Image (cartoon, rainbow over all chains, first blue to last red; front, side, top):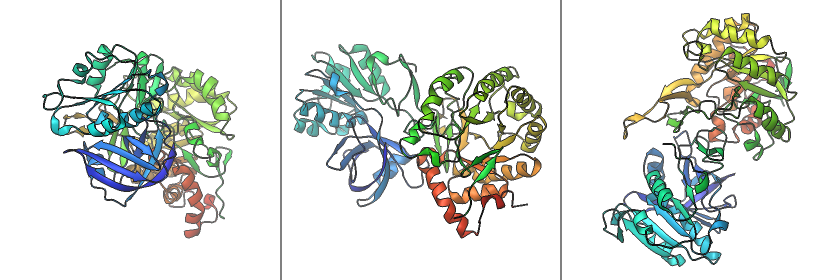
Length: 245
Length: 303
């Protein structure tokens, strides 16, 4: 973990409620894809944890959905503003287990952390397939970005207005893959857990206090003991997950 | 530079700043960021006889000027605290640590305190009496002078280290509880623990916290905490450790003027991991600004 002050370079809408923010400054504290940052926002007590979408050459990209006061405030931040962030939080994805043709499955605002992972896997010579799940066509984002990396991209929409009609599990049905990585809403993660043909890694979300392991606010039970989503997570392996709720 | 050393129950602290239990783990997350030996001491994560997972999640809620937590005393249990956490802590902290203890019966407090009393690294036992008493209808030990005194007497009988009783603010007369603890043999009082609070999510129309209610802490509670520290410090003849919403060096001075000999910092550590280090570094400037040569001169200065 590292505390850094980064400057907002861009902050704009990708869809009705999903925004992209690009920040510049010292990003050396971010050591893996799938990690998150915790952002201090004026007038709010707790920091807001947001997953890292991309990070290179001292440029950090965050893609976030406006869901509450914190993210709503983030969406109004102007270029040039400086933000206080704790970076390099959480474990991130373990790429070493991917095999040659891993499957990346993102649902809604679970899509962003898969971008840096996809980039890393391609750099390592792997050929990932990416499934992006949304409710409807006008919610779709980052399809072209993944395609530009050279990944095969399958978009699924619940209403069939773009790509495959149905859930990400419908998109997965006839695919062959060596391993999987996923992030998205918990019902989606559970469905993937039940239907996936291989082992894989899941990135979880939880309300956090500190984001760096001090408060025990985001603990969960796993087969290998109690874990903090912010510290030993947010990525857990399929074999250790205990579904409680 | 003004003098910052204070004496807490016979042990000298380099400065009065103490990270509060539950906001500092067992120290090493923070030791990655700075040398935690700059602290007066710190109060480690509330420890119980058995290991506890605590409450279901969500355990955290945002509030204006603070937060609610309902962690529920997650901890590895006293045996593992002694066999695993204290040896790890020894590598990054060479001062005496404050051992924060919770229990759900008098016997549990006695068991845990007796074991921690034998640990050379432990300087003080901070006994959290805000937990529900499973043998007393679930009512917190800290809400009744008799129950609080019973815990203190039992713990004092098995320990030689100073016992500091951490009081709950969720009572009608905190002075009565403090006096009961003093009469039962407590060596010090620390206050306040979190204030019982609640938030409701308007979208789901359900409580934000899975446990419905939790402890409210953060800047917003500072005036209430300061008032209670003032009342208790003037009513008992024991050293008082003040806490509740402390977020800067000025707050530390205020707490000391109200009667605290040392000051714990809680929720601020969670939003700024460098909070205590910054407060310690800023104290000399604030002391100078207000003409304070020695912190001991101002303790209880407001009558």
